[in-house]
Length: 239
Image (cartoon, rainbow, N blue to C red):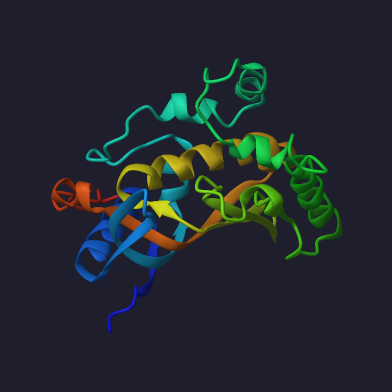
């Protein structure tokens, strides 16, 4: 029996990290069906761990998208990860904003504490002591709401560690991820939020991003278009 495979992708080019993952899932991913009987979703699926460094970080922070990435409204999507959008979300009339949750909500309003503030303070304490920590994390899962719910959060956990100097790394853990239409903008929006709320207030910079998905998949309906994805050429300066 073929199981969903697991792989590591190390890249200093954000666009090629996505393109390489698309090629890998198309070639080696297992064909399975997720969802439920009311809405079965055929996919190609894999477990994928990304390590993004160097120029990939700059590309993410500059909101760059691979030329063939299908979703282009990256700045509008980033707005969903702000307190201003959250106020609209909380005050919207029923049905005005069609979301069962937002990540900003789960990390701030729906938490016992504001986890973004806690992450910021945790990083500050690591810098002050010059001792890194593997306890500086934020989580999105609320068992009484999410256990068995069909629209539970995909992002599960954020970890931020101090690496010395002005460097920090960010770890993102996902239970489920749409590779073809969501992966790039997911990372851009979350890093945009973390830079604004956690990293830059501590006068730090992100030196490495570790991104892991239990289920990184391409929907069968997207496979034909996904097969057209190409690697981007690298210039002599290494971009």
